[in-house]
Image (tube, rainbow, N blue to C red; front, side, top):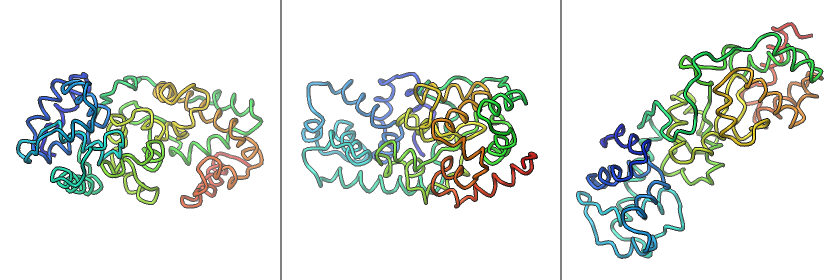
Length: 324
């Protein structure tokens, strides 16, 4: 991207809307489309209401703004169009359609869509929304006693729990090399939790399940951080977290997805607690007791569990850990 990504997200991180406004005023039309979709609809509204004024409705802003060229794009005209086109935000639909600026933004959005679908365009190394805590540099690993407590409490064997951990995170640490809980950002879940609003502007974050797999090789935390700029709670809900890869939307044991995600950054014991809570809440303990791996995999991984052979992998891992 040609605009200053670092400065853009520094402004977002510090809630410096004046800096954002100044930066975006200096951008060409294509840069505005990239920057505007990157910072998301909430901040676009803030820019409009804070610097243009709250007295006029969005439709009035769009209809009253003069025609502009790519080199001197007027934010009063561009931002409502971005909201309407990129984010399917009907509250910001301009009064008139089919004008030159609308056609230009649509074409630029298609270009941005194709670029973002093909390769990473933005790499974020931190949570600029301040939603998640800093990494815990000494995350405690699970102990045999932790496994035994959960197994005893639920009448299942330790091998069954370890088998699930083996399949979900390789049986290794639930944390990455930067001491963050391991995650997998699921674009089809983000799509569901945001009502498909970001399909056009962020195809790598919001798409159908069939297309989501190709993004598993991308930097997952960068994707999470980028999605959190758009909708932090939906982004957290769309991630699988920790040693047992429990979805943030299944925050059993915690009151909300944010408190769940914060707990996932603390310890593997919290990962185990989330696994236990999910299994108890969703009636999966009986399948672990009965070694009904297909039924467990369907309940834990979804109806498409066969696509990844979850049931056979869990059965093999169970045998590996001494299960009989």
